[in-house]
Image (cartoon, rainbow, N blue to C red):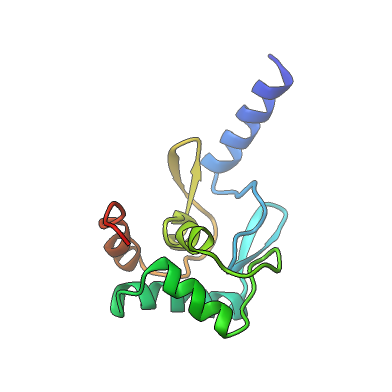
Length: 128
């Protein structure tokens, strides 16, 4: 088995067992493949989902509002439509781990409800 195949198998096994192998997404901190809610960031994750579901804000408007509030991404950048879209469509926020197109139950706590996540993601193909 090649190194790439071993890496893939190892990461797949980790995901199947609920562990997160990528850097922590906005809203979480990470320790030993386990995600823990970062309360300060999670507040803004909830805001993004609320702005989208309750106020029907576009991802561009959400990015504008976050930047206006001085909120930075994990990499200390301003928010963009793409970075907001990434949050709004990432199942990590409902306690899931996506790996190679498959979804697994994560060991981490969700930040938002599945209902709110799927309310947004059932309309994923709508124009902004």
